[in-house]
Image (cartoon, rainbow, N blue to C red; front, top):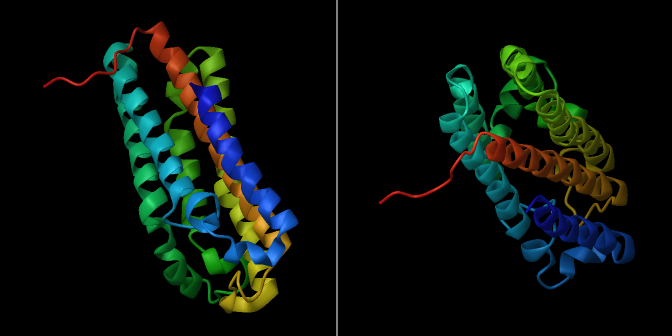
Length: 224
């Protein structure tokens, strides 16, 4: 299943990158591009796919919580809840709300501060990492190292590349960037990179969780 999911993600990422490299600014006028392929657009098929991946990972983590040892149960449940909230945010974009507030606290909303939500998000990532240290120590080495790698891939895409793309966005057109009017190939390709690393992190997580689920004989089912 992870390879199948990676194939779908690859189609979205490669198709988006190819469109920008070949067509450039004309991608905005391609029929169905933003709705069906563009990984940097909102409220489209790639957005739904990203959310579905996170919710699927949450479902597996919750199933593992019932089958793993009692000392790991709450940690798996917490992971499931985090993944669920991330999946909701992927569609609702709640993370954008703090940007203006944080920007005003720092006295500027220019450059990378246009998406100032990355600051509280980065702090939250550190808090979560520290909170799960004891949990990771108890896990098999392959699982602990794999989850760290997967988290690193996702954070690199969601925060580091987000900051880079925001800087390019601001340098290109200030606060008024519009892909139709102020097209930047650099910005668009960095945005594709964001989604690539986010997809990689979540799909790797799913693969790891499926393997762990098989080890502890977790069951995913629906009781009526």
